[in-house]
Length: 165
Image (cartoon, rainbow, N blue to C red; front, side, top):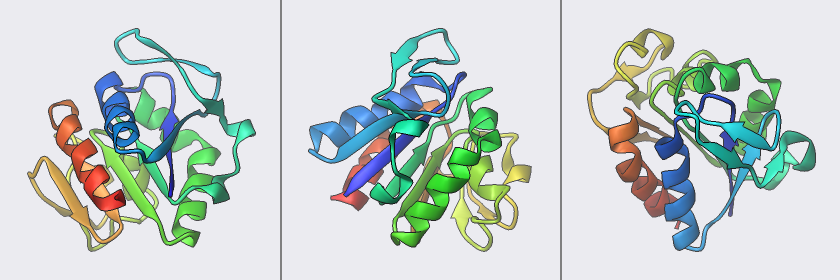
């Protein structure tokens, strides 16, 4: 079990680092992968050094991928072809997709939430094409977990730990 957490400039720091912290404490291997430069700047100016860049990893090595929210982090992830490569590889490995806050738009715009229960940061519901929108903080439907935003980051991380253990 190897998990990828994708980082793009403008990511929401708690939404990214909570899953990394919780999963590492649970001895689940998780890599922070930058879609651009190894030093990634969060939405609140916090700099994070990613474990690797997209050029240094093989998407097929991963059985789960996490998309943190934040703006413009979520739209930067959405615009990256590496997000598509990771999604394809994880689905090929029959793995898990996870997104929080604005980042469920990455899954929604690709039709991956069609007919599934999902949640997101208020105002992004229209991006979750075909999803059954809930107001829950964290929702898991099949192989997809979504969360509403920064206040749900810890619950999101714990849900992923439960599912991946």
